Length: 138
Length: 299
Image (cartoon, rainbow over all chains, first blue to last red):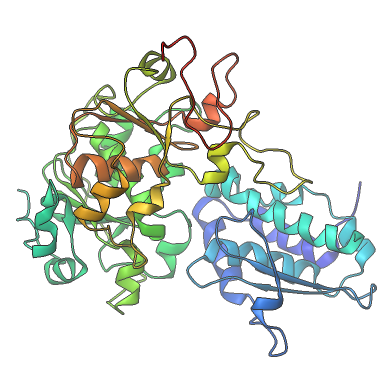
């Protein structure tokens, strides 16, 4: 059993503590908290994630494998995608490549969002994590 | 009582102009008794980041689908949903949503299964409303329960099941509204991902490829009658038409265009779509860009 890093485990606990529409409100809060791209990163230079139903761009900087930097960009009209990106950003940014590679691919099922968000939309989140891992293995 | 239709001149060229309202008309008519506004989106959070004032949210996944069986809700569930949303049977319902009204059209199609008489789309949907900087609200309106009657769903006129489609092969046109890559059967996922949703790729033999979004202009509004006539030149009003996509949502958009904008009388949506057909044992499939022949049909 792989341990989630504290930052991500806390997020999973927060979602586990609320029900139904409150889960969506929590996801909405994450969506609002997604950090803007740093000035030196242009969205054009980032990697698109076509599995998401809405446009998402991802940048993985593992020049220091002990502190991997993640950046996400998704438009305001795609708050669910922004929420998923924000969860991964707050949960994984700054962790080591080894820690991130150890995150179970289905960790998001513990968020309990499947009933509220639909499996189709959740697929976007598994695609984001898979993309990050592939980059780190690459 | 139904609210008078939007007299916008540009709608007059469509077969049923009363099925569309403009952003201007809706702005001017918000709050009219008997007018209810429904937002239905692909993105489940969009309603909460600001919606048309007074609009209620209907989610395709949570509200319109049965939670267990792959089917739509039944008459009791629909009556309950309408009551909770404050909608009466004779209300005029205007539906709008994201992505060129993709999911809004799906909701409208489900309302039609229950015979809700006056249900319209906001031309341009959420994108047009936001682009014009029109008013939005965060608060969820407080609605009063209604006595919406329990109406049995009437699937036959506008919904096709797999047996209907098998029977339809070789007799009438099919329209595949998915992307060209889904139509040809080309893998659309990255090598690390299993092909999700369907075990086989391709399309139903003889189906024409007319991606749904062709009917929408870049501003999310419907294209003109002339443009639509050209896009759907492969089918005509005399045809018995079946449209499909992956789960029946994109083809609802095409169903709306053919039924209400072009006025074709016999159009059904095959909501089983590719997630059913592409997984069924021993049904015919064609790969590649050509529609292909129906097996056993004389050519």
